Length: 541
Image (cartoon, rainbow, N blue to C red; front, side, top):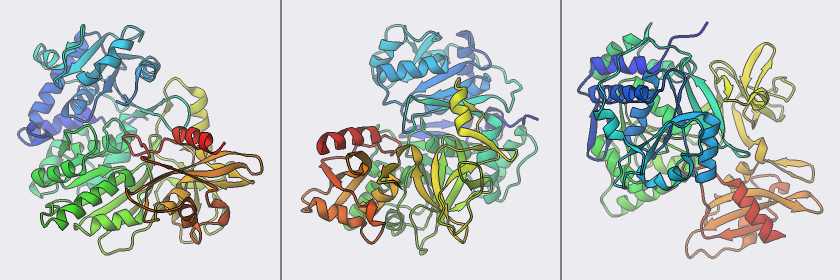
């Protein structure tokens, strides 16, 4: 039987209970919960005037901002489906996603208007493009976001369903983006009960009861002030923000469009941020450098409000966790998840405890299975696939073949199996190896790039590394590493490659090292394996 948990209905109850509490903050902008509800309701009425109704798709081609969450709230109010768009997408990628998602309205920042202008007449379902003001000239034919709000009375509240969708497009490591269909009820069940329990609150019986819950949390000083440093267009930043909002919390977004660690720590001190979401070392390393520099200059940042740093999506090394915790008294929560499932496994590191890399406590609904569905025996050194049961997505939007390949049923239970491989230690902890789609087959041995990358980044001269396979006459594929080093570092390619000796098996030592000025990563911190493979193949051919 379908559940009835719907984020929009929960948030309406919170707005009624705590109307003057801050919901959204960016720089000097503050949106209270009553304003959040009112503006989103007016936006929902505007969407309705444009012809949208239940199940319509509203895409957000936006940087982090209050409007991102207002647009989400408005879409769910209407029982329509929010759709994320990577703000790095250019013409063809943007057009593909709009067509594939059947988007009827596109919200976009003005600075991205050039790409919108190229595709809006080619996207067959698109009714309107709505421009969020960022100082750019209004695109010809676009509707100004604030005009759409000002021109409509708030939409009436309606009864909603746990079946109402959120569609999360993921680029993955191969192929075109795929839209992961999350029901509100499954997403809620995955995200909210656990954080309520940690705060000492039982799950209420109905969404309307979230008003009193939020008030009790506020009275007890447990309302989160959450800063998604990672993009809201990706799961880590967005999902963690859903959790914080559903506890009656505040979302703080940064103003710069490229990650700036000093801006982050300034916002943390100014807004008394209690928790934040990052994506592994790509965020963690510059955060450490900013803290170290501030401390060395005898002007350390005030981190006294921070209780939790959340990371998901990529490797977060023990070295970086420990370096962060030197500066504050907070927990590091390393969550192993993906767009296709939340709660595969996690690792919690407290100050003073020894941090580890890629070693996790398995989640309640997670299993490690062989390709034919047999559980991997702990301590066996056998490799298996991470498989998540429980509340998981329906599948991929308009793609039955990929849905069947990823969401599989074994022994009567349906699992999400996005392709992460792992071993299970004798004590039940999981050692993450990496995504199978980018694994390297060298001389018959399977090598996962992530484990080699993390070993290489332990070399003091190395800033970042991406490991790929390149064609090799003898081994089929040879391991190649694309590496950036610190300015002024004097290190040989052999010294970098030798960093894995004593840490990993000998066959995992890279045979080729390609040194570059910078290793590019996406705004979500993920490696661009296609770029690295092309470059390494050209340099080593």
